[in-house]
Image 1 (cartoon, helix red, strand yellow):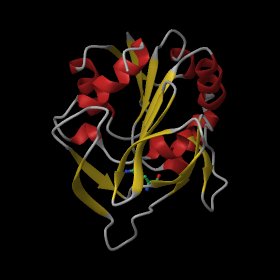
Image 2: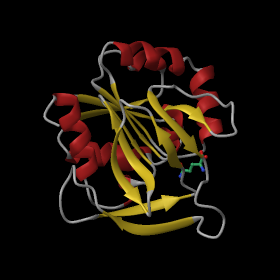
Image 3: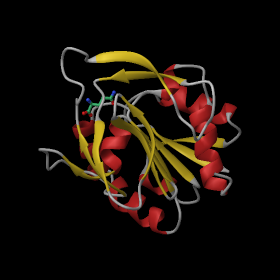
Amino acid sequence: MKVGVLALQGDVAEHVSMTRAAGAEVVEVRYSNQIEGLDGLIIPGGESTTVGKLMERFGFVDEIRKHAARGLGVFGTCTGLILLSREISNSGQVRLGLMDFVVKRNAFGRQVDSFEADIEIPAIGDPPMRAVFIRAPYILSVGQGVEVLARFEDKIVLARQGRHLACAFHPEVTSDTRLHRYFLHMLSGKA
Ligand code: GLN
């Protein structure tokens, strides 16, 4: 199982070590031709307009879409979730459009810019996962093919569509590797 971590911005090293701990061979992806041969790709948090522009400039958008069509699975956290979406509320910024949902950026508002909460995620079982939200988005609405895996106070914060996984929080800043393991199980058909 070979997984790449997009290394344009964000917690690249943390995602690399967690995915390795979860049992995959992992590479940092800096060039679009490195997508070839990967089973999965992780898009870390950051700033989605910046990452989107860099992805477009360096040819990642077409390359990721092309490989998603042959089975590449993408796990997007925070900015990565935004980039996976079909539609971004009030924004025409670059996105991959691989998952059928509408997302709202910085959706929890200024009062609660960043916070932590314990989230129940039936797909990975007990105990609840400590979730760190940093200027996080949430999903406003999903299409039929999208499975909602977790909510925080009725807001959708984790969703799956086929081999793609979108998470509004930052799983890489804790020591809980269950979501990375779940993604690897999705890629190998075990989840
Ligand atoms: N607020 C950021 C954005 O809109 C996402 C924040 C994050 O990735 N932690 O891109």
